Length: 418
Image 1: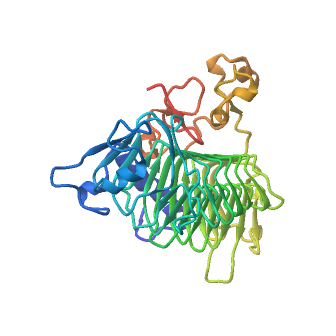
Image 2: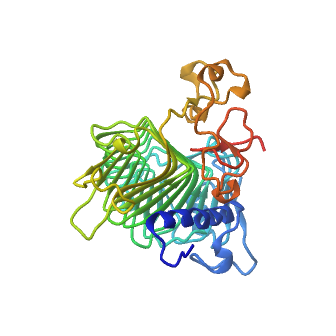
Image 3: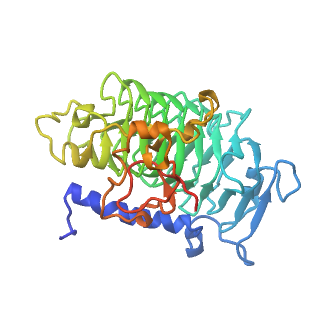
């Protein structure tokens, strides 16, 4: 096949592998800072690991103090605790990583002054950060932006965010959880959960303008906004969702799951289910005057309601259902995914809401799954993509916690036993 000038759907086939190999490169702990990308140069003595503890018996008590002293290539190793105050990477290609993961390491701004640096945003990437600027293993919560980006604000930067939980962040404008703007912004977000975030405007979990955003192995649930309960993309943005689940989000106007205006979204090996809105419950597509375009592609994806759940406001999607207008689809599934909680033995109020999106597998012997049957999303991913290429190697969708294998299961993958 000639890929020199691919069709839209051919381009979708090409993109996941290149992006996800890059994701794996980063997941292995390598950063582009080692190759001269990012901000300040590393010290002549080589990269250094700094320690951060709220108790103070470390190099630094605060994450921001560590960032301020670190040079590109360095690591801020953060011990368990709740860290107050906003965090700004200041253009440095450094790795801010928690020792024990997001459930033990919390970023909560507390009383942050409205000093023009985010108005309550928890984490900011606003100084041309490159992929070597890495935030790894934190719960980001309690952000309240007077404008955009309650949890994370990205402007003209391309950081890497992985293994995080963004919960209970709000924005008076757009992007309750994360806001991304700028034609040079190309962030990568993977292995990350967004829930309980809200925006008065658009994009309860995520909103992006003029940017290119990769969301790899992400889970979105219980987010809400005026438009785009989970994800909003506008103004020539491109959003790429791979191996992700967008479920039970809501919008008061349009696009319970996804809202697009003059933007493109691609969903591969995904689940879009149970989202609610008066118009376009799963996705709403809107377009201003030509030559701007709005396009939505779903490949190897479980989409509730199929094409009928994707509404094109001002677009004649039903009359011209081509890959270039409204929605292109390949191997589209329209069956209940049969979500089950992992911690079913606990009383419902005590269950971890993030563990509610496993896929039913009767082989585990659980009576609830025997009654439900096997999820139709198991083994329904693109057969041409390896789990290693998808960035989900060693991870699982099922309560037996066994690692997934080809063909991959659809939707978000949890940590496995390995």
